[in-house]
Amino acid sequence: MDVIIVSPNLDPSVSLGGVSAVSSFIVNNNKDCNYIHFELGKRDSEPGGLKRFLGLWNSLNAWKSLLRSYPNAVIHYNFPLSPGAIIRDFFFMKVARKLRRKMVVHVHGGVYMNSSHIPFVLYKVLKHIFHWDVPFIVLSEHEKEVISLRFSPQNVYSLPNCVELSDNISKTENTQALTIGYLGRITEAKGMKELLEACKVLLTKGILFKLKIAGVEDKEESYINAFKNHLGNCFEYDGIISGNTKKEFLNSLDVFILPSYFEGLPVSLLESMSYGAVPVVTPVGSIPEVVKDGINGLLIKVHDIESIVNAIIRLQEQNSLRTQLSEAARLTIEEQFNPKEYIQKLNTIYQLA
Image (cartoon, rainbow, N blue to C red):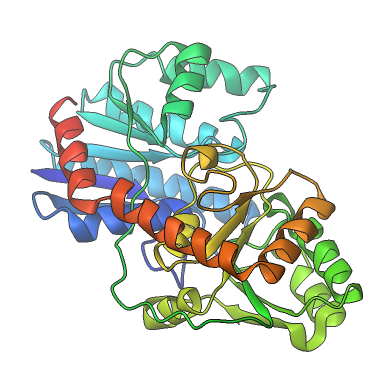
């Protein structure tokens, strides 16, 4: 089966994000399909403004040409519910609809997955899209319920993100400094402000830790410099990582921190859990379906510095709890996120397009 998969660049050094990671996982693991990748989405180093607009116009023409070249291919369209993507993707998907192409729409969280208010124009666009007679993939039963209540689509399927399980884990017993890690976009919506303030409090309390951050920072932000200035030797910035460097980074973590304001189902969370890092995360999006407080991780409050501080101190002081949560986190990925089952379910959904 030919499948045109629409997503940002699949190279993590070019485009760091969950949609790229999920798409790369699918392409690398689904041997039953011949994937044709159509790149759509801003690269990390790409400028905005007029150049970005002209690039989208060229992409729309390339999209029409690609659809003509593969008239029988199923379209796997990755669709984040963020403001710019909603408007952009509507036009691209509309072209495919006019050509009566088979399509699966893969929804990936975003600002307006759980937001209590959606601007009128964006709501009308989403209402129109979700009334199409195509299969929609969401990341959890929670998201399925939200989408169904808001937009009443006909065909919605829950398919949680999946990661490949690492076989090479070498955790060392650490009774001193905790290694705390974050992997992803470095921006305010990921809770960087709260993380910085929490780390400053931990220093004043004499808690031994090292914070390691990997990813790309939005150009208008300056969190990396702030972390360096305030934390000194307790902070390490590893930049954009992939391959063995990424594996080494994840393997070095005792704790994975994600004080995000909103999420879908972060691939970085699943990856870190597969390496036995204890997740300390906010209960947003589909995260509570994976992380259970006190069982395989710790839940913290959104916009709450104190809960971050308390969680880290608890893990630093209670070695047995940290070991227990680490083993349970790894086991969660082994039991609930099987790549073979994921691909089988995905191919079944393709058949329904």
